[in-house]
Amino acid sequence: MKSITDKAEVSVDFPDKTYMGAFGRESSFDVKVEADEVLLRLIRTGEERREIAVHLHYYLLADLLKEIGQGLASQEPLDESHLGALRDGVATLAAAVKLRRKK
Image (cartoon, rainbow, N blue to C red; front, side):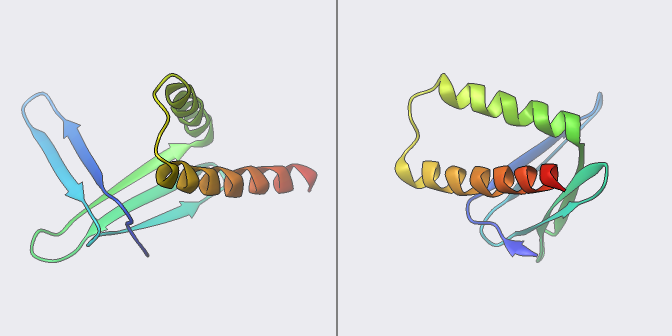
């Protein structure tokens, strides 16, 4: 498990109820890469314990990454701290995808 550097907020809406949860610096996350999907887990421990798991298949993940890129391109520039973190994450992903292509 890795510590969450920033925060995440999650909501799930059903016809008769809504579940909401926040995951901050006291929370942790885990990413598991599998053959057909990526599993993302967010975990908050303590008295208000909660956990979510999101399974994203690769076509959906690719669509999400494209939409994020398009959204960032159409917005005011982010501050350098956030841009640096995004650059590092994207560079790691790009290097891994390029490496897998060669095998």
